[in-house]
Image (cartoon, rainbow, N blue to C red; front, top):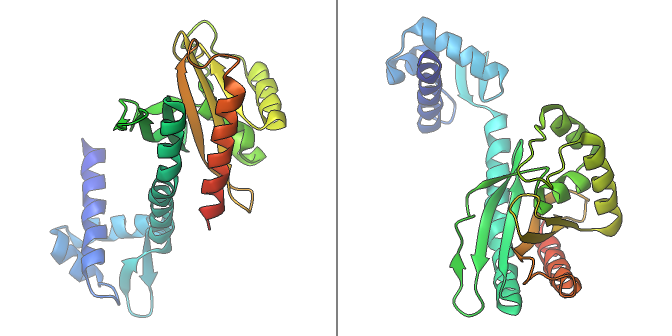
Length: 250
């Protein structure tokens, strides 16, 4: 409970700086606005300064919002932007294929379903929207890992829990690395019964002109619907729309 209280107090400080004057607030002002003692306010402010969430203007003895908040805000904006940019592509894919189509963005240890639509004529959101999916047991997760930088993959591998979800889930790091190498070579990822039984998925990366991996576009459905004979056509649709979204990214 103490940790939550500290976070709440830090949030109160950030809010007071956000609503305060542009030149920042003095310690006494922050304490007054938040109801904290000066000692507590100072300790939390200095911790926020270390995290670059708050900036200390030493000559004026004032505190103001730090540059990291802007960086984090830009990342949130980018995620919102890609949802808006990708939505026409999601709609086209749904209408052309009639299958469930998903846009996933990376989190620290998983992939987040930013948008998920299903239907040919009347489109509706699916229960997947908002869920986080594992990196090692899904087509989108493997696609992200395959096309991420070496540093990102190394960092993920340090914390990745290769839990078996089904009997076909890859739970060995060497096998996973071999699979990722194959995905990079072919340009897309597939999944069959690795996360959900009797389910096939295809995922392609959305990579901007600078080579940065932003998200994945994927389709998934039953093995009967996403048959081996039909997969090349569905893959071509996904690659076309992923390229369209990529050209819109700055």
